Length: 114
Image (tube, rainbow, N blue to C red; front, side, top):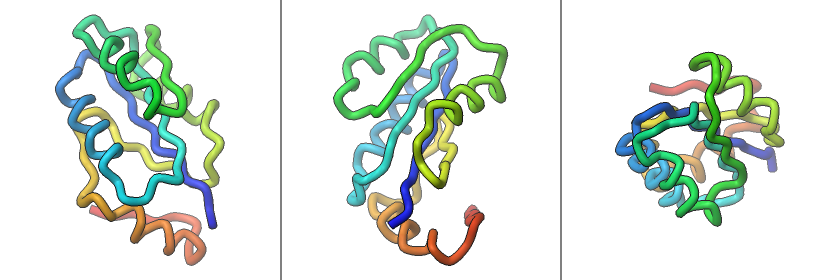
């Protein structure tokens, strides 16, 4: 089975981050790495991360140089063979979407959806 890392980036979007985290936490398939990169938010995002440390593989909260710098920080610490970028405020289609898609990873190098 292929390994998956989900990377979420966030900056001062605590409510969106919480929505995204809840979407990831509700997945029926749980064998993935979850990384959150926060740009040093001052809106309570860091406290939200601290209160969910046990459900997150790795999180970083520090100033960065923008969206792509934050994504690259996530890539550097990711261990998964496949990466899913799910930014703060985004949610997964359903609670079983990862379970369904993970089976397709052997079929292609890139999978996209809308």
